[in-house]
Amino acid sequence: MENPPVVGEALLKSLIVSCYAHWEGFYNDCANAFLDAASSSGRAAREISPRLLVGVFSKNFARLRDMNHSRKAQRDFVDQLNLNEGFSTFDKSCVLARSNLNFEALSYNYTLIGMDVGHIQPFRLKLDKEIVGYRHELAHGGEIDMAEVDMASHVAVVDGIMRIVAGDFQAKIISIDA
Image 1 (spheres, rainbow, N blue to C red):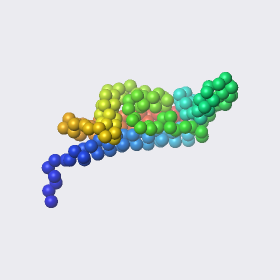
Image 2: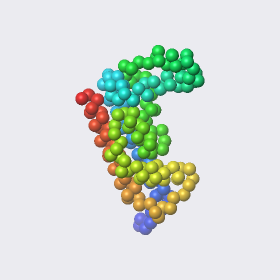
Image 3: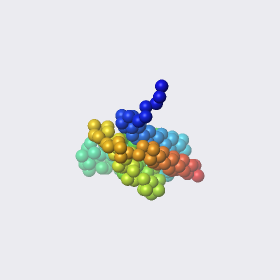
Image 4: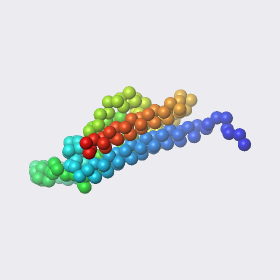
């Protein structure tokens, strides 16, 4: 039996959605590997990156908000601060992708972790408009002119960004014990 001469539009659309899912899942795998290494180091979160205190204080922020940022809540918040806290109570969700891992979300997460997102900047439009944008459009019932999509390029961009992210996380993990 011969292979069909043309790949169906549904298959191309599923490839777009799969590429995004792979991108988001890969990022989360890298972030989890980093958090595991950080936790195993026994170091305080702020020693690895001061902004990781966001994950340490996440529950305290919620309590502060729930009490309408009252003066008492503010005082209690300060009383509960532990700048030497490790990762035992760390809220991983602050650095994991939740959905739509676009350049803005990636930049935010990189900043918390203490990594520079600058060398991903050249991929910003591809990340936002194609990897995330196409997936978002398809996932919410929209249409994309598949004749305009270069699937080989799309897959190559996702692969390239993931390779950069892998290198960034590897370097950050190595720096934990340095």
